[in-house]
Amino acid sequence: MNLSQEYNIEFGVPSWVRISPCQKYIACGTSTGYLYIISIEEKKILKFALIHTKGINDGVWSSDSKFIVTASDDKMACITETQELTVIRKLIGHRSKIFCVAISPDNSRIATGSKDTAFCIWDPRNSNSLSEIGGHTEPISSISFNYDGTLILTSSFDGIVRVWDSISLICLRTYIMEGHPITRSLFAPNSQFVTAFSTDNLGQLIEIKTGKVFRNFRGHVNSKYMVDAGYIHRNDNSDGELWVSSEDQKIHAWNVQSGEEIWQLDIGFDLAVANSTPDGSLFCVGGNIPGIVRLYTPK
Image (cartoon, rainbow, N blue to C red; front, side, top):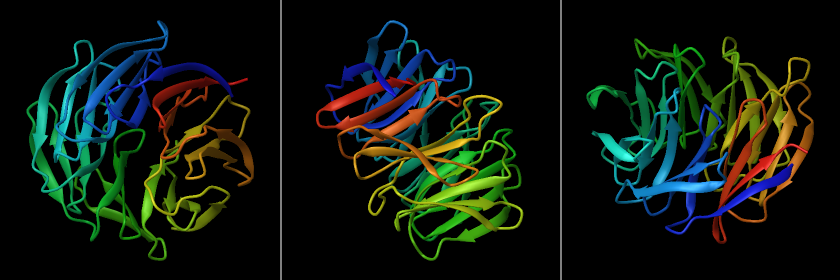
């Protein structure tokens, strides 16, 4: 990949980055609670604001790119309007740090997962908590909706991945990863599989219906921290790609069909956060020495 743009983040270390669905902006949350908006077209930081009193752990854009939901160590999730970076809702109810957040494709529900081992479903229109579910025994490390919003995926340091019906909140499937803490889980684009990464340096592709492990992904380093991961499908004729941030200062990527590692991106700093567009046309990373955000494009 080619390094296209680089930005210095003044207030804190980048702890989360995400490219907007419209592919015009990058959002970056920091360890000090600041939220930055970067214009890809104008190649500059447009604005930044202090959103949380403690570090931001995760965040997500709405599907229309008009607002961002962030999750923080201050036990709150904030809904922020992106034009002026004005906080329009505060979601309060978790008893400890919020590690992860997701929003349904139609923007009607927000899901948050916390160190308190519970996940909550919220109505973004009024800040009300619709449900609180205690489906894990250790902190929840990641949470996501599938492509049509009918399923929710949670994973935890308890080594368990669960698939939930998003309306009834009944647990439909449970997968136990041999007791290793789960650092990231995500739905495959077709929602027939989930991928889970764990602290034994392993990624697994699991069929939702049967629980069968179809593929193992190895070569990256993941023994301590939560990681970022995503799927890329470059064109209709290509096999899908799966990438993950790694503790060896690299991004590793595999062919999903074969499990073969097909590329690496050497980023040169620790504790990287990362995100890509679904087609792989844009890839961004954030890191800590110094606080920077980089945007890459394919060669």
